[in-house]
Image (cartoon, rainbow, N blue to C red; front, side):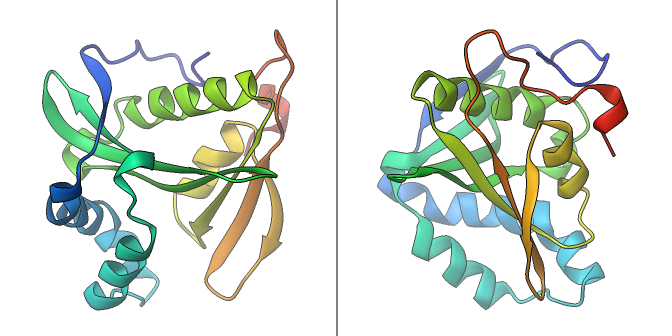
Length: 168
């Protein structure tokens, strides 16, 4: 279920990442996050590399391809109590086309099939906050730099998107 009225982008696929993909994914993350991090005064390439490296497990990482071209990646770590959406990045040239919504809907559909909630962290003052709220995530806590969200597992047939009156 899409949250906007644009047609869904075509030619999208999620494919497994491999051990040798770290540098390409790091470059993509830097391109996707640079503006938000600079605006917040937290652009630190070394810290960004360390954070991505800590969570980089190819078994939980998927390339986002559009017509065979890498336009993003998603990392979902299964945990006992929920799934952690650790990374979801779309290259700036591919943003605003509904790709992130398409990917998130795949993740949420898979989580719902396993009766798992999904947790995610977003940088304060980032457009990602509106994105996650639109997709049914609920703010759980606030840190110095980040906001922490959780989207409860849904039952079959239950909508995954908040009604327009509840969106920000």
